[in-house]
Image 1 (cartoon, each protein chain N blue to C red):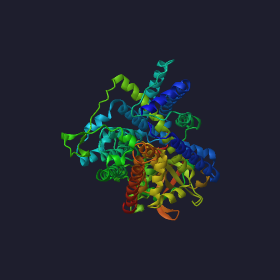
Image 2: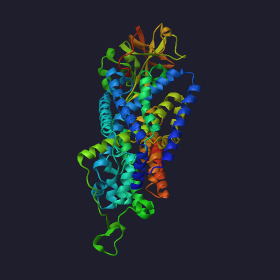
Image 3: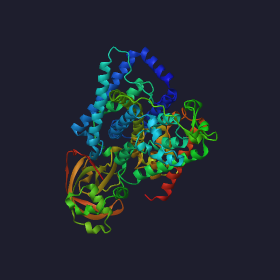
Image 4: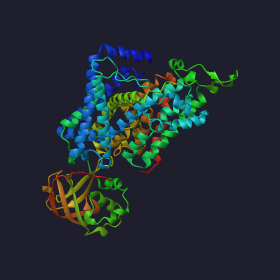
Amino acid sequence: MTAVAEHVHDHEHHDHARERRMAWAKTAILIGLGLYFVYNIVSGNLSNYINLRFGWLSYVAAGLFFLMGGFSAYTLIRSRGQHTHAHDHDNHLHPAPSWGMIAIVALPLVLGTLVPSQPLGVEAVSAIDLNAAASQVSNGDATMFTISPENRNVLDWLRVFNQTDDYSTLNNLPVDVIGFVYSEPDFGADQFMTARFTISCCVADANAIGLPVVWANAAALPQGEWVHVRGHMQAGEFRGETTPIVHAETVEVIESPQNPYLYP
Amino acid sequence: MTAETPSVFRRFALAALILLLVAVALMAVLTSNRDPGTLLNIFTTRFLGIFLEAAPFLLLGALASGLIDSFVRPDDIARLMPRNPAIATVVGAFMGFIFPVCECGVVPVVRRLYTKGLPISVGVTFLLAAPVINPVVLVSTYVAYGFGPVLIGRFVITIVVAIIIGLIFAVAARPRDVLRASTLAMIPPPVVAGGSPEASASDIIPIYTRAPRKPLGVGLRDAMGTAADDFFDMGRYLIIGSMLAAAMQTFIPQEAMATLGSGPVTSVLVMQALAFLLSVCSTVDAFLSLAFVNTFTPGSIMAFLTFGPMVDIKSMLMFAGVFKPRVVAYLIILPFLLTLLIGVWINLNVPL
């Protein structure tokens, strides 16, 4: 081990300027990532990526990035002109840092800055299957029934469906939900789905769910547009299946909500 | 943090992964009828989702490993170990709770412990269990999956597999059969208990040469430096791994993924291969696995979460620096077979 350490030291000695440039690049990335976390928290973009229940973890991350970045900058400034290691290791020997490694760790920063932040939309939906949705939402419990019908969101409704044997008992209950328009070629001309993404942890586990809606002008609604649907529930046929369907009285195009996802 | 890892192999592995990533993306953009700009957007959102959720845990893991590196001496761990090898093997499975190290931190620690006279079996159990059985992984798995079968299964299966393999080594292995000559040479000459000429290797009382403790200021300074280096070292695996996961989720059609992920045996093999290739740190691999929960079988997710922390490209190369080649093969094959078996069993017997 000592031999390796000395070798590394030699190497650093020869290439001191390069080492320092790399150390500064790493420092800049650490501080940059800290700023990126703060930006996501302040701008509200964080809700595009993760379940806000764990939003506090982003504060932890920002703090730790600033701590490490600040410390690294401090060490670099103090050691200016000196040929010293920032630290030496005993059990920990790192592969010599390379520009490739630094570039990879900079990728989230690059993508986060260059690609405009957007929540998952209708383009990310591959298919919404009513039954798949039911199995996905089955972990809800009977408390769904204590939410008054007009306050239920898409997820609450699917859970209620899942726990109802006789769909006709839901007939004429008032419905008031928001979601984005989703339709497939085989939907009836007066049918669409009010869809939402549910996320448990972060968008990697996002799952599209949807409530079938009957609305005379359904065909005119642009795919993916956010809508506010008001109407009542009525059991009926949707894609060959018997299911409760929202019979819409009004469908109003709205701005996408601040928090686009539902958390099961 | 891997002095023993030949950098040529690491470079090769990394380059292969990047090529795979580019190939998946290219193939997808060429075959998809969706707009490339939209696809890039979805990919970026998913990738950043995993990164933003995982980064805090990667930082905490790096910080813990830096602090351990500065303030915990292998002597401290060796002294805490019970003398009875069987009990010590079981204790070894839980040592990670006191010394939270992930799979990249555990190998150098185990090597140092062996030179302090730690029984082979205990080291093997610690080596396999510690990357999962520690507080950082407990919390990150909880954040990803909540309290439920995945969290419990991950911990129970890891403990069982690590102890089984440890006990196999307790029965069947002696240091000179297991360790590389260079590691053996570092073991201090034995002091035999009671001076009895019949004393065997198990009576060896290791001499604890105590490295001096670092002063607090110096220790903290070193810990911060190590943590930052660790973050970059492990961060690139996380970033490449989550980019590949996000790319597969975005560019490969869901039906194709579901076909790959629905076979009770093939799905487990695919996830094991992925875990091995991606080498993502155990503190954050739970987030990466989320990209597959909707399309892959529960058993395969479980295999990913238990096999990956024990064996991957990164740790395999580090094993090779400590153990003899035959033992490295056992350390790969035994966890592979056990987690495969358990994964397939889950798929066949546990209802969705």
